[in-house]
Image (cartoon, rainbow, N blue to C red):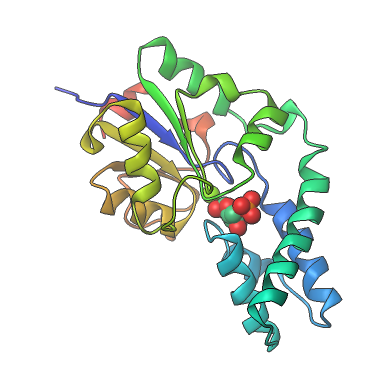
Length: 216
Ligand code: G6P
Ligand code: MG
């Protein structure tokens, strides 16, 4: 018997591809500090909070900054990032994401967003799918970053379901680990070589079906 009652979705890399905007903004920041930042390094920042990302980048560049300076730099990066986010259009929603959300809701599954991004609400509004989520748990509502399961457990609680009744959709290793730590099933979005702990790995939500969901 299947006991799945809810789906919890990460945002960046699952619903939208904002990684390219994060990359451009971080690169601009790194360049302004006199060093470069590669796409390979950007990969390692998936699912990583803004503050932690900055610390990693400064480390790669061999640059030391005070806490106050770090705060300023993180704000600068976010301002550049938001300039791009504010231009986002509904067409930027990733293939199959809206369709799968619609399918879930049509059969009575609850839906939540579980993202580290403090800009989640703005992004959802820009792509016009805010009303497709029964709950939104973002970086403003949690204190412990993935791989801690806090964001997903808060999602389950907000939906009124048990963790074991949830399926998480994640593109980041830390996110897959967070879902496993929260006693949830997890569908990895990306490559199975990378997302090893996932129950199933698909390339995008356009490959997801209810049949696959109930077989997890
Ligand atoms: C997601 C992204 C990360 C980003 C983090 C915080 O997890 O994958 O790359 O650093 O959110 O996003 P924010 O919009 O709050 O800077
Ligand atoms: Mg992600």
